[in-house]
Length: 597
Image (cartoon, rainbow, N blue to C red; front, side, top):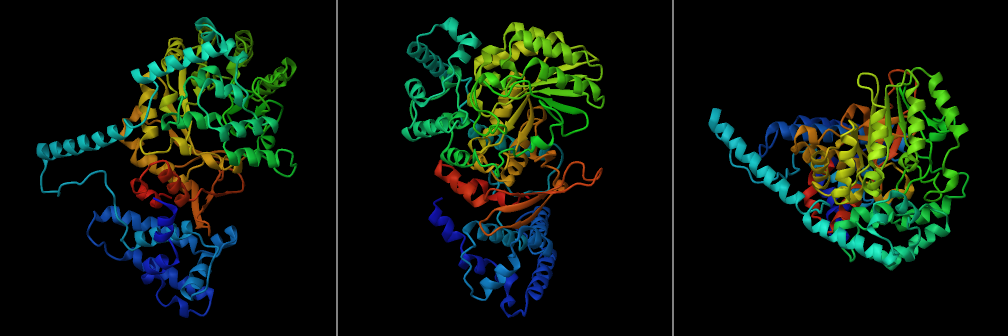
């Protein structure tokens, strides 16, 4: 759907037409108070009005309830005070014929869909055309339901089949050719390829080398050069480059998005990198670090960061502001600093769990990892040690038999467990090398959990569902699905909160339980995870003039101690749908997104 068509559908004239019942006579009100009272009374009346009968009454009632809740919040004085935007006055101005150039199509889109919802005029777009329900029961009803489930899964499989994954024979043949091409260009052997240290020595950090090894657009080359000039982190392992296509192709879109910095990222980072008044520390780690190398947001777990670099840099990394370059020598903590951090953990007996991350701790040598595990295992109150690492997809040959043995050695059933937290974004990242690395860990009893960041590049219908299916097949448990952090420099990656909820309830829900064990979460700065499926943990306050929803998130410990809530301006749903249409998606496939809070 083009931007022009969106603006035709969602403009001031369409808004006045769709809101006739709700807005009737409002232009004659004497003041804002009277307008507000009139709108709230009509919302209550519309909510109580009977269903029109086209859809099951319960489904329509739930939608009416949700739209009523949203509109009550949007029209409340508290929302206006917090957001600084008066939606009631905007409506009053429109009904009186006053121009409001600040209101964008995204604003009208949200309001129109909510008004349709509370009036029972919003359509339901089901997966397939269902037969009329008849009075059947028992085996006959069970067989009819089974037929419906077959139809649902047929549609799901067709959609999942439109995305590439790295385990198909076609993908394996292509990656083999890519590997051979890279080895020939660099002048290396198969033995080199299987050596993780060779990959680290040959990490690609400049645009010219990328161009010599795979297809890349000139604009992207320029952005990489600018990023390096501005000392922004950039690096790709030869292995990960072998996963990329040699020509323009949507198959590897998510893979490229992991490492190639977009224009808005480079510009924003470059403009603010030296600005002392601008912080990239979205999670406020500086406020939650009681000692160097330690971050603590919860009573029983701490983060330990012995290294602050990786073999490959993810563009949207929450710690990109701390990383200057791949494998920079000063990024490795000294032994004295690590000892002080471990002593601090030993002194705080409330801590039961340590997440070793950074950076990627698996770039440390085997001997350093073993030494770190030994010192942490000697602390009696630590019963779980986790390693956060992405090498399963960036450098799977790092998971050697020796490293797996070291991790397994420190597992003591009933006393201490060892786990690996990884970060696989897309099915096309998974290869047989990943499968074998996972198997080495699993044979040592090491549990592996995936934390996906739900970016624009992984958010098409049933795209992440396919990822879950393959993760479980190879032995990885889906653990968290992260809403991208609200960092300005990574706007290209962000998706509306409503899309994550839609994905969880309309897509993930269709696969068996062990394949959808992930919880969708949003990280609140300085405080930690907010569980998105629990709607009581947040409120949708209002819709801003540009179409962005403003949410108020409630901290996990709000009933335990006095604490502040967190305000968040989301990505515009309309802008998100327009981006999807630009890559070939049909926005109508996502129609229910407006009704997820």
